[in-house]
Length: 338
Ligand SMILES: [Zn+2]
Image (cartoon, rainbow, N blue to C red; front, side, top):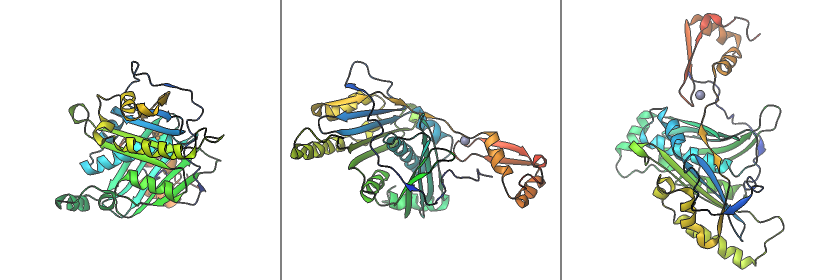
């Protein structure tokens, strides 16, 4: 039996606040090439002056390898989930929130569901649900790529901020439009009249011994509170130039374990005067526990509890981390939900 409560319910909520103010209060320093930070499992925020361009470079090594290795996903499913995880981390870094940021797709393709969530303290997890037969059919057709329309199909992508009980939940939902998850995210920004943003994502077995790695780069235009100090044409030119430079980052560079985040940013933007903020660590950590799953089971309707009581052992497996929890059926009191 699977964890019966997916983290995001598809219900109406408040619209998601604008992305982009998440790192504004951090102190920034000039790019120090001599003292590279730990090059993996981190968010590296950066800024390009004087055009008020903000960005984040995300590098995931052991974190994404651990999440993807907890499941026996076929390669295309693992790769697209890896991209979804790094996209969730990139976007969460652009939001000011205290709780959980969740990315979820729901669609009619071979991969019918993807969930990735990130807590404020940097704990990330994710899983995918797919139809094996349809996926095998897709893989058997030469010439078909692992693009979003083929692999994920038609559907929706939702971004949700949940800050705990007794708070409003914020959510933005948009149709899946684009060949890649990065394009789908850009479509969201266009639809929701968000700030202009560019996003690049990459996930592959590029680590030691074929370990999964993932990388993401997001650049956004956040007009400064007091207005620009340079003329409008220069701001436009600066934005266009930065987008061209960003697009020159290859998928291999985004995940290269030998290319540190600072060196990659220096390679891309040093002529533009890139500066970096302090990094935020990211780690693979699930929030499931026997107590939490027991609480969910005990909240079932009385009829379902009666069914559970007939089983000697009830095994519930967490969708996220694949950990199994055993419960004795007789331990469920018949009137538990009354
Ligand atoms: Zn779990």
